[in-house]
Length: 200
Image (cartoon, rainbow, N blue to C red; front, side, top):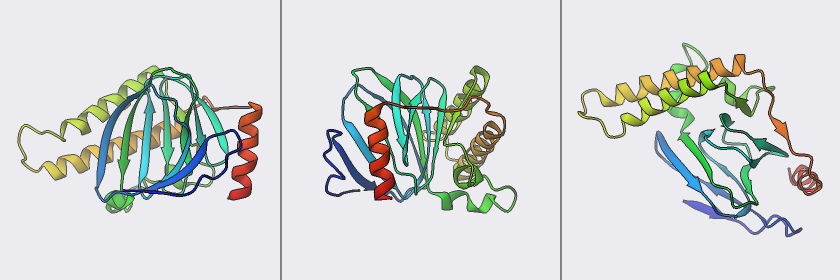
């Protein structure tokens, strides 16, 4: 379900805002787009892992616009205003995992796997090296394989274990990722940042 509001502004930025909700434990998506849709800023009641298979795109998180690179992993919580800024005709491929944080709260008594999503100085974007990217995709595919299992023996438990492994892996990446995200200094982007700072 999507709740659309009136445009935030029409300052030659084609910007609008919406909020998205869902009630599942998690969902997995593989998305390839070649559409110029402007600045679709949104929030949602779930957390999101967003892995870039291709780069050459810009992505807004709260008041900052970043250049995305191949193997960038974006971490978003339910309060992050964000959106892809696609003003080209380039294909943009990504894998997305959206999940209800309540789904993993029982893991926190062992380790706070959600800390990387809400710590004060947390990075919003992790740039993974080739080995890390391969490890992430292996774990992603493992989790995805349980969407259509060969049998349903203890499938909910297998899904939960795979999800816990994936989140632990992301926390490990956050501790070792050395390449900082690249911010966009384009004048239009800086003007958008001022608008969002004012609205927030």
